[in-house]
Image (cartoon, helix red, strand yellow):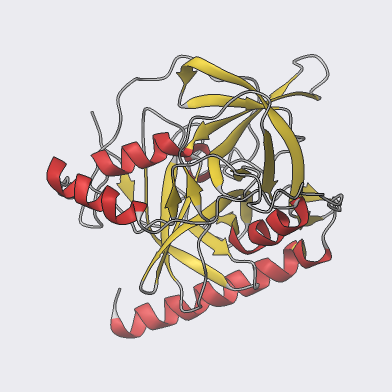
Length: 328
């Protein structure tokens, strides 16, 4: 078995939007590698228990929030992931979530199929756009064979605050929100949609265990599935389509964040998360949260693709000059 770990300089054809439900994948999982290709040291059980206890003390807000508040949280933590070929031309794009920040290293999660082609080819360049318009090149990325998950790391010099994570047992009927970056009339606009959990699969395929009714589009793969308290509970990746018409059927699936954390722990990649183990709670004062409708088009999140690619190419040109002078 090959254990894939690659740098951010690769070529591939992006599968930005998922089609019908995937089947027939290997049940094995990959070991995360460092940049030299050596396996990372897996933490002992005692170290993992200490880490879990430390993470549990970093509790986040469990209170149910209005959808407008959750949209604001999601606005700052939903990543736009661009893939460029060797000529600097786009192969496609996907979405992600900022889940941790270690010093100046930002950590994001997305789908494996967002950063790899169907032929498992590597991309020439993988770039991240954050909510403030900054563009970063990915330094390291790794993925898992048993789940459609990938992790990206990039150096970030801004004071970004990662999304909070919640790992309680999800249930059909509970409210969830979805955030991602589909294309829209030549531009890319972050969509924030509401829905509810429709299914918890007993036998997940490639990790996809959570079904929900939210509206999704291509380009939203890797995006956030948030609960009523604005915490990440799953990573979106599948939107079922009618084979005859190509239209979305309304059946969508995500991978529980608990699956991601388990795989990261098994591979010794433990980050400092803002984590909670409790379901959303009603406000202590007994007030019922009234949520105003959230606009489907948020002017803060409407970007011109050409402008982003121009900035991305400037970033790459600068890196190329620096590497040519100092060596990389």
